[in-house]
Image (tube, rainbow, N blue to C red; front, top):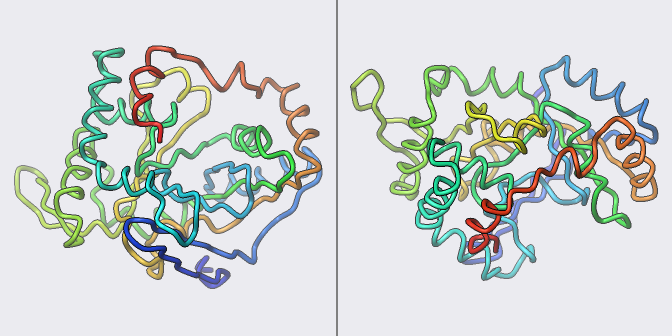
Length: 287
């Protein structure tokens, strides 16, 4: 079943660069015990799901570059991030490589994203207990949700249109840079086997980290690259459609879940590795 069959889509644009999507899913699952949660996610993992935990249930798994304090008014911070996306990306890469000189540019952005850099990457996890931790660590008075990314549906829809299996990290950066240069056209040129090829970037990309850094490793991270930010989410290839289920954690149960997964080692000391040099390098871009 196409997830769009179970979703009512409402696109809200507040003006300027401020974009906001609200997706009302009918296929929410409320769990009240860790045993029930594990049973639910084990079934989903068998179906090829990845997971993203958000502490507020009504917030959708949009890329962080679009995070906004308002659904309807222009948010100056969001506007600044979008207007300076290319410049910020280059400077963040330089900052991370000053700390880790041997990492490539894509890995530098992946590391920065895990330390709070706002960009068009969304971080997912193969481990549903990691996502559950991020649901329960904040906003104790608000229901949270683990959003389930249907990787099987994504593969059937997108992979045969991307040449993705042959891509290395430099190719992803080439695509990213092409997107920034040609964002108004919806297409870009890339080289495939030495030949220039015209591609659409209607399709998102899943990126598996090739160089592991402690925080990325412990969180079992996989990244979703949002290739287009100014598109109404009506096409089935659009990333929102692949988040086809929510596992809801009630506010009153957050403390219980947090305590239970801490017994299994899922806590701040395990998942949130500190790196003061990286934090200093990307601090100017954390807005």
